[in-house]
Length: 402
Image (cartoon, rainbow, N blue to C red; front, side, top):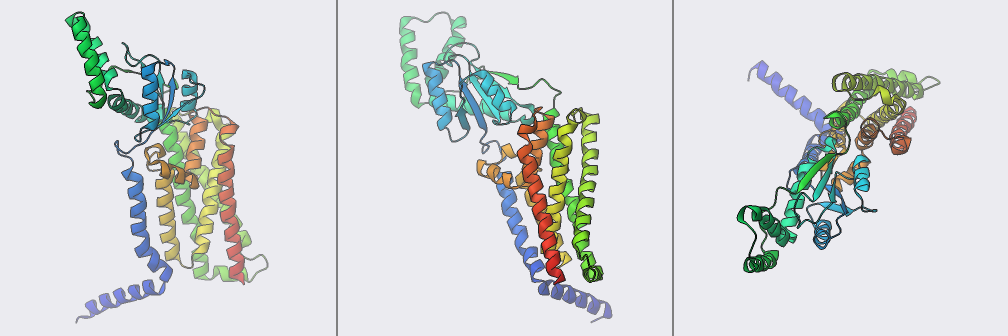
């Protein structure tokens, strides 16, 4: 065996032994990848058109027998999360969609069995796919639950070309309508009128969404990389010298926290300045609420990064754990896929991530023109996560001293 080959084998053996001795890194190396796969498959498997369960605000303004049957069928449908609004008005539907409490709105403004377009879809352009999906779901429910209504609309549409029906033909249509309650017909495409919830620049809501999503994602990436400096200080012996002093590691942890917060704010300024100058997102106009939101998000990222790195014993563990946490939080929290496209249970899990709170806060400020009442909870949650992480880093630093 040549000397070159012996060196290769020796290096493989050394690296294998290092990984084997670092049991934490060993577990994370081979356990976390399949766990990430399971999480990502749950996130992305629910984003296909067939599996999306939109949250739909419904108002029955027509109040007819057919509209009542349709609203009942919508509420019972497993393919959509329909909720009757109270008061049952078109303005209440618009309010809920504008506030982000519903993915889309449906106003039944006329008898579905009559002529014209009885359905008004209230859409938010930041959730562009919600409107066509709402239309498809309503058509499915209408065909399944009200086939007689679909038939009568078809007859009404062809009657002007064929002339008025005779009494015998009308009787046959009535009989066919009763029979079609058990045999769905083809759906009618002339049912809907679409209305955007806000008259703003097209795509502004989507840009505001992804500006927030990218900001919190990169704030965490940068904070994790900066927090890894704690491992370098342990490895090089700097931490030992600091621990021998009077102040200990406390000022170091706090100093890193403040630097990471400042670094995140600068990154956020760059991202949102681009959003304003290129896409016209009104950032400067909402600076009074944008700044505390950004500070809270950056404090959250800095504290979370320091806390996670402090838990680990080696740099390999910290790198693997930080990568895992960033990927999972980004996927569940909405930085990769909008949360309204996820299964309902996963949308609820998303509220345990800082991404969901940060994204919703930025959208509320920059897209919906919301006030403090819509974002103060997000400020509290983000700041609390950051302070808990910072506190954990301080506690572990004191234990290291002992």
